[in-house]
Length: 188
Image 1: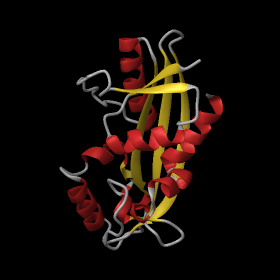
Image 2 (image 1 turned 60 degrees about the horizontal axis):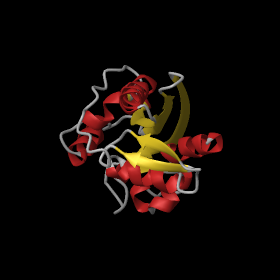
Image 3 (image 1 turned 45 degrees about the horizontal axis):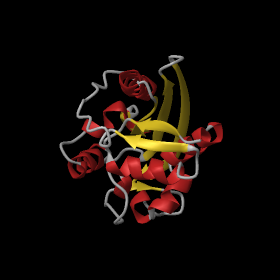
Image 4 (image 1 turned 180 degrees about the vertical axis):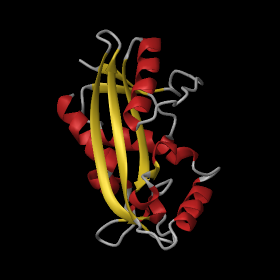
């Protein structure tokens, strides 16, 4: 028997990663586009966990469906974990955000991490369950790679490849979101 799981993001890249990871589960994945939903949830939380909860609760309660939200970002240690929860709004475009970050990191330690918090919210029990994924790396000063999105072209791994140099399948196995999704998948 198939159950429905509402994905509470409009980001096509995130939707693809989530669908790829959860494809063989007993859930039919529904997107906000499938529901023609144009609502915007204000991410007013001070943490990834708070923002993930706000989105999952809003849409889960609205549609009375099990809802999955994701809040992710980049934390650069030498910048007091900025851009953090503001990662998506750090520049007007991803390119501007990357350029701003590279400029701010001049002569600073480039160590950083991507973090994802998934919130699975059940509107019938009002119970959230959280899943965390972290990926360590460094910020480089010249973008590389043709895949990925956001900060992927400037986030370098231990193998000296950026996330943007990995295919979606390779990235899903090791990424912050992939790690959180694997934990979630174990509970589905």
